[in-house]
Length: 87
Image (cartoon, rainbow, N blue to C red; front, top):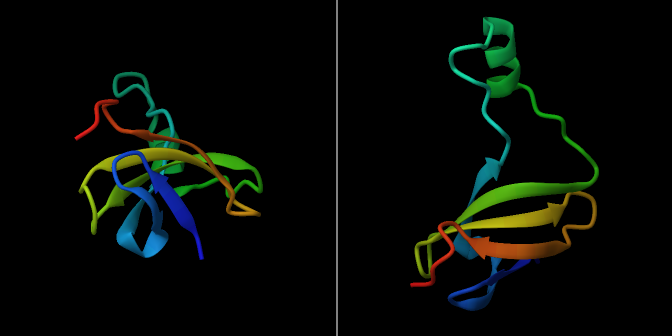
């Protein structure tokens, strides 16, 4: 079981959340070739390391969270609300 520490609701089972994907920097719209856009949209690195992810707390405070999760151990660290303020 994966437990996510929501800053508003406390520790919750990951079943209460939806995974929104890894966070990455978006290429500049004015300077990007089609091949670079294709890489950004469809290719993932699939690292066996710490990744930054966005999650949405569907069954709780209905807020977006940014967290760092280790893809091998599922250990979670540094959970923050998107926008910083608490509900």
